[in-house]
Figure 1 (cartoon, rainbow, N blue to C red):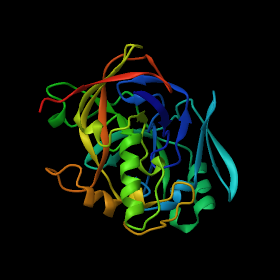
Figure 2 (figure 1 turned 60 degrees about the vertical axis):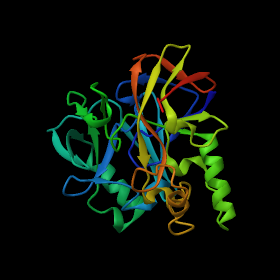
Figure 3 (figure 1 turned 45 degrees about the vertical axis):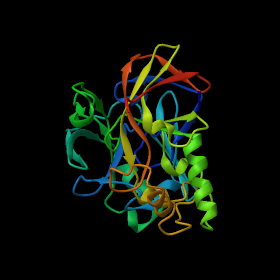
Length: 281
């Protein structure tokens, strides 16, 4: 098996950046979910509320995070940490410390997306703060993450996407691309749902990822990640539910949440050969 895709999402729920390589850290790929949008109540804002966030492209240069959108000129946000008072922001049930970016970003967002973006601001995770991953699935270990939904890595496979798309087509629906599921790491594997039986993925490069928990999917999977539109209501969620890949769990699942258990600071590359260990039956 080998890695066929690496994607980092510097700003939660905006477009990702496909990479050929990335540094691995306990909190995720370098720069992953370092920024997040919040509303006036400091609660996280995603494509669940604003599907049009999918239309904002993201670039990282040596000096800046650059956001772009067809409606406005790009805006550059310096990578140097902003000065200002720490803010308490909320991701699901977690309260995190964050640094607010310039109000120029808020004005830019409203110019790009219209009134629906009014009152939204951009914040940066304060790295002196640690956001712990839920302990229930860590087998006594520890892990942390930035502004991801809950885990530092999301791993999917080509075989599972192929199986889902075959079911979609059989139901008269259109197939979907992998970007609907916003993974960090895609593994080429011909066996559908094989990742649900993996315990670890290791490479000769010395890193080890431990798969912790099936990823329950939400309505973001229905959003076209190029246009921000919803081409088919409830799909592919409806078909995923019918496939019942996790019969002991409620909801639709696709991919596995993971943590880094060896190889802090090492480099992961597209093309890396990886080997899995399997859960005991």
